[in-house]
Length: 73
Image (cartoon, rainbow, N blue to C red):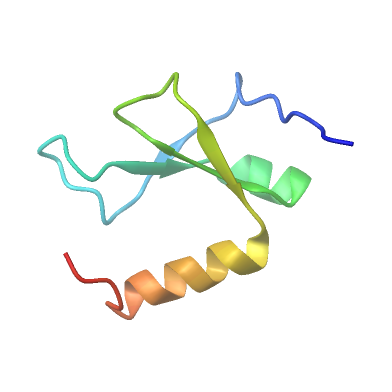
């Protein structure tokens, strides 16, 4: 069985790693992460597009990898 998370009222926060020139813009909805245990992530340039849901552990691992500069451009 699959449930759909309603993201229509979500308040999105832009990543501090996103640039201001219109590229690499990632947003997440922290209130939904707290309320539902799911971290929705989307491309801020496509606000009507899909959001990827992550579990808290996967999201924490991703954030730690970004902070540790593990990704190459």
